[in-house]
Length: 353
Image 1 (cartoon, rainbow, N blue to C red):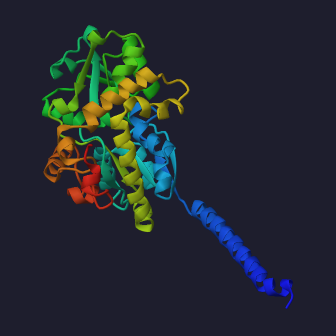
Image 2: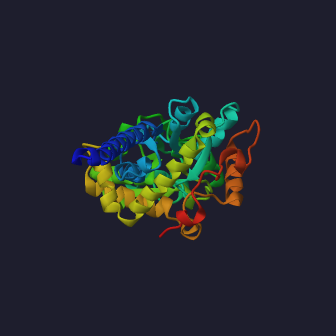
Image 3: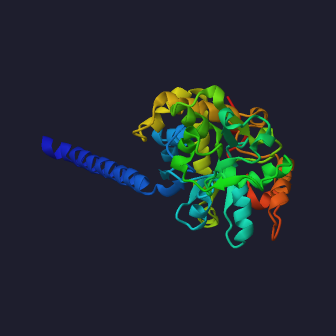
């Protein structure tokens, strides 16, 4: 037997092995291409611009946390914490970030729309009235009577005015409320065209400072300090998306919690994700805004003890009672009609490190 004839079976085996290896490589390439293509698209709307408080969402994108969950997330800016609700309800967005108290009212007025909150982020609401001492405003709510306010109709803080005035016994018959656009709200207060404005503390205070208003001339009334027992902004989801892609909702929240924890651990690094998406933003300003938001609204004593994302059912029922002081329910909800915790990561993963 010649040498070639002895070796030929081995040569055939080698060629077969090479063809098999090539097939495995090609199959792997198809698998990874398919995995990338199989990422679930998810449209998300913020409540506001790309500013400091948006950092946890943007960090989750930049660090690939959403991709780790098989999600292709697009995040758009918003025009107020109330507007996010109809955006999600209409199906324009799958999920969003908005005021849960406005969601309560929206659902009562639109009973066929089953948008639900799935994660509480602002355990303490940022709803505020911001005035100037030089315009006669003090820390006493009675100083608001007879004054002129800049009150954007889509503003989540202004939406709570009926509760604030009732629990503080205010007479607004001589007050004037001007429906102003968000961009001119702080400029009008800075120029003295209005005496006070409604807004989120971490936005309005810092915007006023940047316009040269002295800090000791600014009065911030956090509604939560004046008897308003409400929650703030929550992540919400459309019923259709939740029913069709529940694992995507869970994955989004897991990724967001990771982004939130990173933001808490290093706010300065986190705010870089905001700056690169906002050409006019200044890092020192957005960092201050973010730190103020975390301290006042996100990392509350309750959250330190219970972790991110959940609610206290008894407190939520009290919030519903307060909403009912000035809003006539067609069908008063219970907490479970508005908020569900079934999509949240396990409790241990939501505890502050």
